[in-house]
Length: 47
Image (cartoon, rainbow, N blue to C red; front, side, top):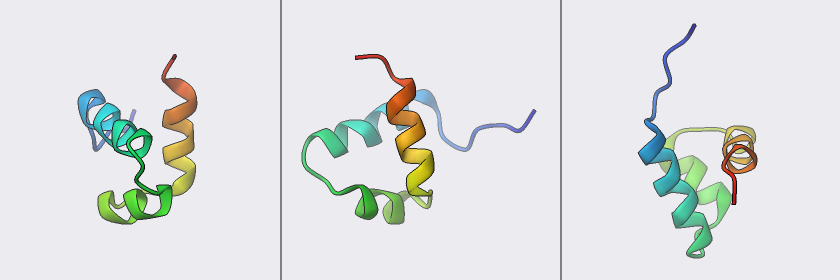
């Protein structure tokens, strides 16, 4: 199985940046990931 590039803490930090008002496209560009990955993370975190 492929190892994740980011830790769970880093993923939560990125999602918190989005909740604080950062745009998805900007976050994805900054962290080098796709928007699909971002939305999959957002869907997988309960709450």
